[in-house]
Image (cartoon, rainbow, N blue to C red; front, top):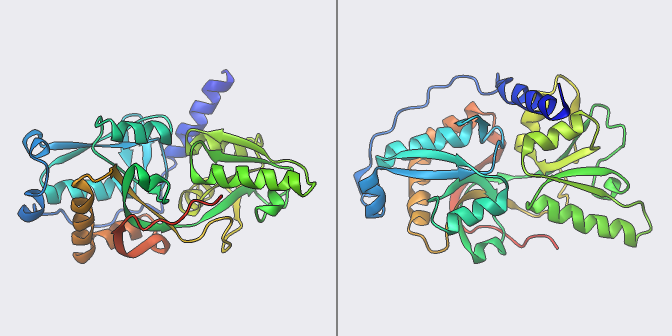
Length: 296
């Protein structure tokens, strides 16, 4: 079996080693809310569907296996589709730049994500923020390279998601390491989360710097091979909000916001987040474009 086949098998196993943390929970079926449905663009109401795009597995929010998606985001988009009386289909593209391009070209109606909301990204898109996130490191068990912060990342191989905010922060830190006379950081950029975490598990990377919720999921599935570090620190970020993405000025932004509020008020949002062990990422009040400045 060649290295690509081994990687594919390992990633598939990682995705299918499924969530005791995603224990079955009673997620109520939604009734159509005619007031919200009436706000859909006529073309969507007529076609009866919308396409939500993702850039691969981002567990426990988006877990993509073949053409099927599960996870908290899937459960929430199912509920949103029921409230609006349309079917929401899912499409996968390679990387965040391709995802944003697909939305802005009109090929896809939205991405539910959640995707990091920053002021620079708000120039071309609107974000409907529905979670708060934190950025930490996943490392090999016992943390052999003693990576506990950005400063201690100097001289190590750090995996990140290509085009993401964590990539920008680690690149800035790489420059700082050089300026301080320390060993450089080797930044390894990957298009998806499973490939990034596989690099750490196979010891091709010393750490994966990314959102705490998916890293918590991956650590729980790693048979004791991995652990989290840098928890409780800013790690280059202030308050980090994440959410759905729509084209700038799209009427879908306010509609998604009010639909999420509807799911919060009837308890569905909380039930889904708890099902996937995401209580610590719940947001009290969703909003549009809550993001801050992307770290320089």
